[in-house]
Length: 123
Image 1 (tube, rainbow, N blue to C red):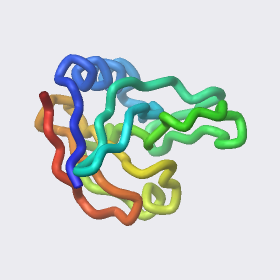
Image 2: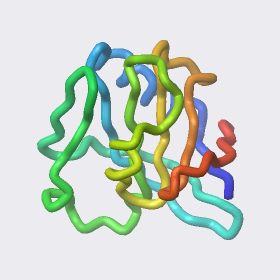
Image 3: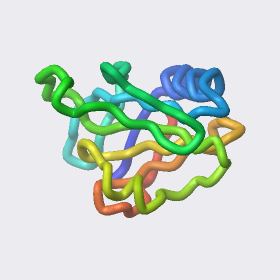
């Protein structure tokens, strides 16, 4: 499975993560599922999200009913571009994009809900 995202949209999300640094950032990804992958085309700010230097969380029960929500993006201010055990236990949706400090296009990875790395295509 591949994940497709527009460069400008991803750069916007990276700027948000950079602005939140040294705290983590979290966003809910919106998009559509296709035969060969997932297209990310928007994001929303999760209501009542709280973040600090080592975690980002939001109350799932406060989310609106929206079937275009396909996953999350969150940042690792530490620079680690791999999922932690806590990340694996808090997957929401089908995919998770991880962005790591210093928040450049090459500092992004995509994972499925099982923690397997996915192909990320920036268009």
